[in-house]
Every structure is written in C-alpha cells, then in structure tokens.
Length: 345
Image (cartoon, rainbow, N blue to C red):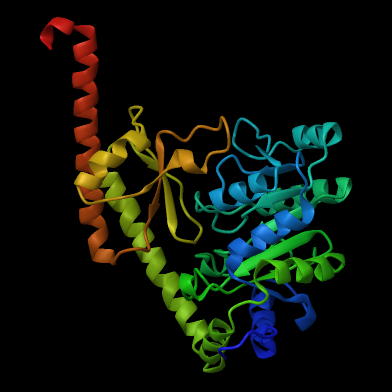
C-alpha cells in the first residue's frame, strides 16, 4: 500500500458499478484513475490543447478548469446564450463555423457554482453540435453523485462515450483529501492519457485507493451517499429560507444537488467589497466574480456553501451576513452623501 503501483483493479470494478448508476456502461480498461478530478481536467488540457486553441464553457464556471485551459495557452469563452439564459445553439453553430473549439466544458449535474442542472433538451442539443463539428465534450460530474433528484438524470457520457470525456471524483462524496478521481474517455485517447499521467505524478496515491476500496468493499457507500444527499437537501432548504428572512431582495437559484447556493444580492452590492464586512461578522463566501469568464459579470453574486457547517448554524450565519450587507449599504450611502455634499465631511 505504501509503494507506487498500478491502479487497484478492484477499485476500478467498484467505479464501474458507480458509473452504471450514472447510466455509463464501461469496462475496467475504460476507467482511468487520477489524483482527483482537478488532475483529470489538467491532463485533458495538456493532451488536447495547444497555445491559441479555443474552449467554450458556461459564463459562470469552475475557476480550476479556466486556469487549466489558460495554463495551456488556450482561450476560454462563454457559450452564446438566449435572452432567457438558455444556450443559443444557432449562434454556437455559427461560432463553430467561424472558429472551431477543441472542446466544450460543462458541469451538467449540480453545477459549480450555480447548483442547477442542464435540462435534457440542452444536453441533447450540445451533444448534437459536438457531433456535427467533431468536438469533444468534457463533462465534469464531480457533484453528480450528490443529486437531490430521484432518480438523478443520467450523465452526458451515457451512450455518448465516443464524444464525451467523463470526469468524476470521490472528493465530494467521501473526502477531498483522498485525492482520488477517475476519467472515462473515448478509446483513442487512452494511451496518450497514460503517458501524460506518468509525466505528471507516476501513479495515483495507492494508500488512498486501498482506503476507498476497503470502505466500498464493506458495502457502506450507498447508505452513506443517501444520508449525505438527504442532509445536504435539508441544509439547502434551511439556507434558502434563511436568505429569504435575512437578505431582503436577494434571489437564489434552486439547486438540483451539490453543495452550493448561487445568490444575487439587491441594490448593487459588490460582493468583493462586502467580504471585509462579512469577515468581521464571522461569515465567508465566494464572490461571484471569481467564477465569471471575462466580461460576464457576477459582481453582485455570491456562492454560498450549505454543506460546510451544521444545519443549526446556518440561520445564525445568514443573519450575520444580513447584518454585514446592512452595514455595507450604510457605508455606501455615507460615501455617496459625502461625495454629493463635500461640506458635510
């Protein structure tokens, strides 16, 4: 267990079964173990991208992927959208004719940071464009096993393994520090991934693999996952109710799973500027702008994590956030008045 070695075969067998719950039928040789989902994203970028290449993603997206794309010297742009926020497939086809991207990056189930899931029609439409132009779809399914929906929608890779590179991880469902993830990708890419992985770190952590295997062999995973989803749903509902009480005018998306509540504040509050006041009141969040691709806004939005603390701590924490917002607005009004009436200073 303490030596470098090949991936633990029995763990890959368990991952095959987990993948079946996401609608993916794959053989053991199709499961590629990585040091977390982040390494899988990095390997995809190293393998597929060259400087100047193009990738499309959601306008608010996981910043770790944006960083991996940029580190490869490539450009990441937001999908064109309609006025209602849905993907504009006609505009996307036109953009692909003008300049073909290497891949589409999506988090279709329990999106980070938005928490929502893509509708079946949007998934099918994006796959149709990908097939039409010969473009890979990189599906980040890190939160797919934390779906509140029963049954959860199948992964985009289900039945589409010639087009979709599916990435998943034990980080969100068991523990981040285990650093064990996996990838299921089109067969022609597999030998190249093996070489890229060897360059990156020789092998995934054997000790973590054996720990996870022992847990799965005991048959505890299904009950654990069900308890986790149930607890997270309750915390999400508690946080949404607390926001309605303590953050007047704020609006939140309704998560379909995962860990996050995406909330937009009213009155033009800049969530980057609000951080200092929030910290003084003992609360923290992720400002929306860190998830926004260039020019996509998010300055008045925040990503709130409803899984980090116990359910009974959520309402008092959101109340403190409400106090921070009120303090921020008071200070903003004072500043505005001092600019309007300099003699008052």
